[in-house]
Length: 92
Image (cartoon, rainbow, N blue to C red; front, side):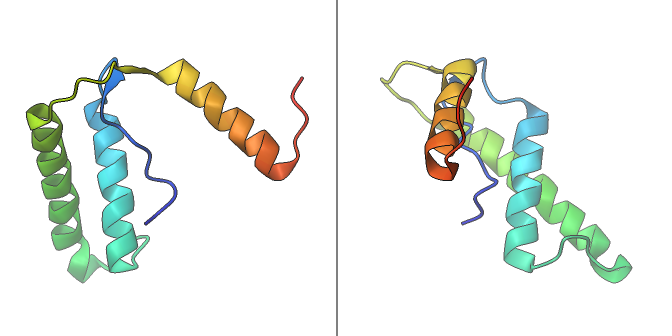
């Protein structure tokens, strides 16, 4: 799966429509192999992105969890620490 698609469920505040749309766009790009579709495919491509976004929002609205909501800043810091370890970047 595409590494650029980030986990969006169970965050406080919840994922925005823009975040869900961006993830949907990345998914459709990945499965089609198109970064930008040809004009002939553009309407179908955009329709697919909107449908995936709608289904994703419906999924998030229907899911339940007993886990506490994750904090975006804490998760971002964890990602920075993983990247620093992975790529040998010194933290300041």
